[in-house]
Amino acid sequence: MGKYEKEAKEILDLIGGKNNLISATHCVTRLRLVLENESLVKKVELENSSLVKGCFSTSGQFQIIIGNQVKDLYKDFVIVAGISEATKEETKVAANEKMGRLQKIVGGFAEIFTPLLPVIIAGGLILGFRNIIGDLAIFGDGSQTLTSLNPKLAELHSFLWILGEAIFHFLPVGVTWSTVKKYGGTEILGIVLGITLVSPQLMNAYGYATAQAIGTIPFWDFGFITIEKVGYQAQVIPAMLAGIFMAKMELFLRKYLSEILKMILLPFLVLFTTVVVSYLIIGPVSRELGNYIAVIFNILLTGPFRVFGSILFGMLYAPLVITGVHHTFLAVDLQLIAQGGTMIWPMIALSNIAQGSAAVTIMFLNRKDEKLKSLSLSSAISAWLGVTEPAMFGVNLRFMYPFYGALIGSALAAIYSTLTGVLANSIGIGGLPAFLAIQPKFWINYIIAMAIAFVVPIIATYLLSKGRFKKKIKL
Image (cartoon, rainbow, N blue to C red; front, side, top):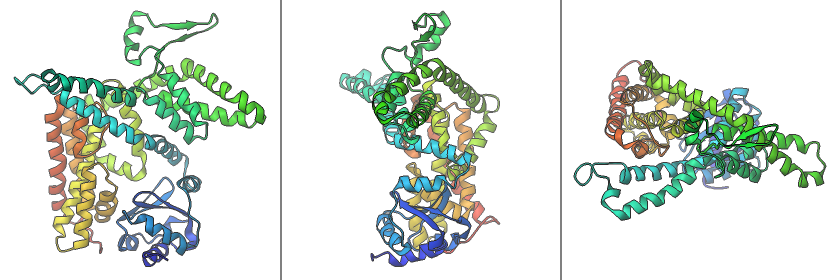
């Protein structure tokens, strides 16, 4: 038995014992459990346990935030619980059986986009750096960019676009791969499907509106039917729907084809049919769907209702993180980016900053509590760098009043960001580094919005700590 036997036994008892545990795995910082009955969990006592920094339930899993010790704790936990180590996929399957239809849909979004986040974040940083050297005209005589002053930087600016283009213009390849994988299809077919959506033979999606207006859209003419040669670069909705169609079709045909036909005919039938259906139906319909989604958010966040919309988004985003529904905004962000810029990502980053500021306020309010000071500071830094779970679940939701303070700061910062028209060119690291993803002409206004998200939660949390909202929890 390892050094965390005592803590493992304590956690097992507080989640309802062996009989309440169905499956267990872990990620980098969290125990991920599937429980028979989550109401049996003694949540307050669990959060006060020595290694536990917080806990929450999402997508059918009860997750306990541990930190870097989670791997060693997990080894002792499975021994104490008398269960075998489960893979993440096995735990997902067990959790899926306990989820409702809406939870499964939201969980599906998360599973599709989570594997893509590393490259999307990398792409955001790359585009942010390109913004600094190529679009920020404040150098030299005050109206020049760094690339205009230095030919070497101009070369670097051009070179970096290879990576930016690969990540964002050809993003449908990653989306179809991840979607087909999630729904049980053959992954390489998903990759090929994605390539067919962004093929160089197809008109770039950015030029589609102009070509449509003057009636010069190229097409294939098969006599009985025509197919427009239009691509879906940088668009996620067509790629997602096409990937789902492909995976479902493949699983259906597998039930009825013999083994030899599966090898010979199945890949061809699935790929050919999906590509034709994507060009004829899925692509055009989902393009319009994406346009309508963009219009709705543009009306809500840039039209006459923008103050109401920004307050609503600023106050609801963090609660949506608790449910996991926030993953759906990634698809909307990418759709808006393809049309010129997103106003959503800046507000998401402001929400992260606000959660960190509320958490760090708890550190100052509890200066004599060494454990709480350490937890508050580390979780605040994490939130300011874009990872809010330690701050939200480890500190703010445990006391509640800092969570309210963070929502107030997030809403006020979102109002300022929306009223000043701040847009992001990409999705990057949430929190303080997010300004790199912001279009350079909005940097000053966004820095002001960040200052609001940083300062207001501190003030609001302090004031709320003096009132009836204060909730003391022994740590």
